[in-house]
Image (tube, rainbow, N blue to C red; front, side, top):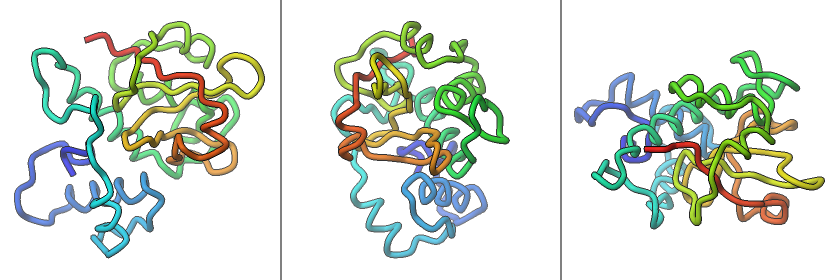
Amino acid sequence: MRDLGYLEDYATGEFDEATRDALQAFQRANNLEATGVANQATIDRLEDVHVLPGEVEEPTPERPDVEERQELIYLASTLVGTPFVFGGATLDGFDASGFIYYVYSQKGHSIPRTIRDQYEASRSVERPNVGDLVFFDSSGGPTYVGMYVGNQTFVHASQSQGVTVSSLEQGYWKERFIEARTIITK
């Protein structure tokens, strides 16, 4: 769970409150019933999760930002289920750019509030890394944003579902995907 960004400390070998909370966050992020119990559906999903090239598990001199990225996706995953609110950027509800603004701001990043400004403030990357922004176009230019969480999935504030996790491979998103960008500069 720590390697996936859901558990901040190393495992103790005990199934404690932190472990249960991490498991529930993983379940919510993967659209599973958030019971905090490792049922068969959860185990199957955990077995499916793997680290893609470009997704680093431990900090290295070349990639000192790994823990920062894991903290971003952990915070984002805890917000799954928060309702969509047009113009929202608080725990009461988020719109797409408000969700990104909130998560990054909570982790000490200065990031613009609007999708267009978030796009312009970030730089293009060849392959997304966890915590990077993914942009979509539904009417000319970037009109939607989410945060890449690995395995070709991203977390975002959906008008119909609130904060949720979706696949970049799903037809709707695949057709509208522009590019991945990052604001992390380490």
